[in-house]
Image (tube, rainbow, N blue to C red; front, side):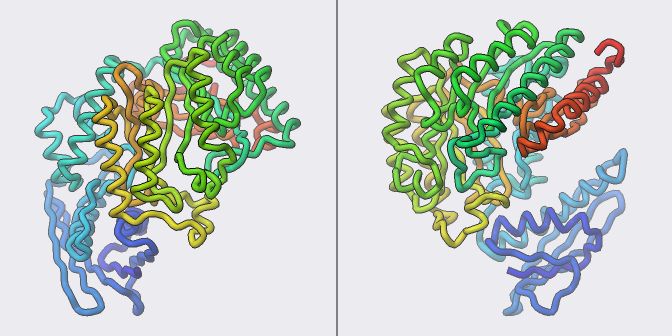
Length: 503
């Protein structure tokens, strides 16, 4: 689909308009200058007075016309970025309306293409805006459907019941520890994950840097009396390393981090069942870590083979029972909607198999075509469900979780997500992941430690977010972890308003 747009000279419009077009069309080229060869032309007129008035006219090759207008008050803005955002949203409103009319497809998330829609509702809750008014704004300004607004409200309510002090955690931090190794690389994955076999030298060097980061960050936290809310070991697969290496890592955590006994939650992703052993589970038990993930993704063996997961369905089930027998009492499992070759029948089977295990939480992901993944680079090789079937599977997940007493507690979306759907975490009562809520709602600083770990420094007073990422490649990380640790300490000093002499 080639879309020629006129009337919008500012290049800042290009990306948001391309992202919205991608919600409707698989392959899409959007141009902000007139093009001779195009399938659709859309002419915009934008007038700014005390209001923003936007008009759009679409004409297709057959001469069919669609027209939409939108007007709203132009609010005072503190800078050009805020001013442009208001105008951009009004343009997006008209653009989406026109495309919905022309295609007959309703986008349930409206003009939103960002990752964290529930943040919009949290902002209103913090301002104590009545729910009815907040919902009206989501409906009118963003064109979100009532179905999705209801889901957002359900999640926000659940989050505030799980973390009643969610809006008051700015003076604490959470820690993400990234371990960039896996048994194999999955076809849909873009996380920093390297096949661990034959890389013991890289693993040893990486762990040396990781211990250094933990020790140094821990010293800063202790010196400045900053508490830790949660710790999350991710990756990769953090159980790819040996039981001995895990033992030393958790010992370092207890030695370096302040008041570990009172950290609200410590999670270790053991997502790949082929990395779980009795020895590793004993180590987790020794250090009082009982929240883990064991991720089937699918219970169809052919699917696992197609996406590069070299474990069996039986191994997933066996490792789940082993973990349960060894005292793991808060287990999360992941399922993915729309994996290659899977439709309603296969997803129904996965839900039925999940019912036999009843993990404390279930995260239902929708397949996303991430730019750097093997699956995206070779789309022809992987046949996936269409929009309608993906939505049926999401509805099945919603019904299944409701029937089994799971409630949605966090949500995020991704670019190029199948069917323009979402990823939703469901949990049984009192089993929600605090870390998942914090990372999605961006209410506190999260310090990323390890290879590929991303930090988000959130200013305790202004709420302004500063992003900082460690290198994804183990060799680059090994060569520079001291420098990256120093940079993070500097950012912590700035955000927590601490003089360097105290650090």
